Image (cartoon, rainbow, N blue to C red; front, side, top):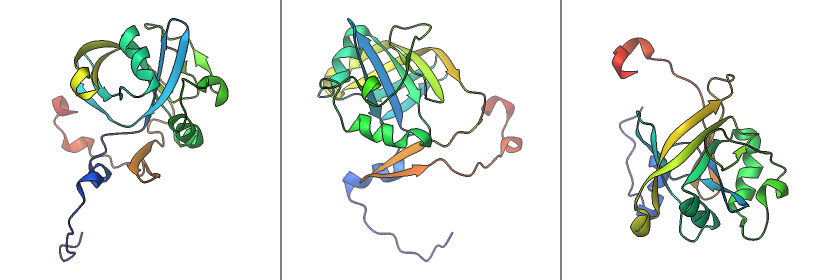
Length: 186
């Protein structure tokens, strides 16, 4: 890495390009027979045991009422094979179309919650709402993952990471440094 490259001021609305927390996910939900899928990039792991995940679901999003009322959702992990579907889902409203049907995706039953899985995704994390104290102020939901499934291969799938401006980065080369970690820190 070169130390002689000058740093420039980053506009504050571009900070996310550097701090994006993880891969784009598809959040599926249901309430009283209505189902939806939304594209989500603002999420973070908050605890390991129990497994807690926090995410921002805007009150202006059609999924907001479904997850708030049901108290459940499924966080589905798509791979790059679903890039066009991820964009299409993010650019459309579940108030106007059934996104499962429109994008040719399979709604499969979950094991612990009523929200459906997006079968084409690499992994599924079934969630129950455990803390909604930040929803009214920040649209921030805290979920407990109560069931999880993932395909065995590939162990490290190509996932999408949104940087803004219609640009994604793809999870790339794997760097294995397990030998340098203390066992309890893995």
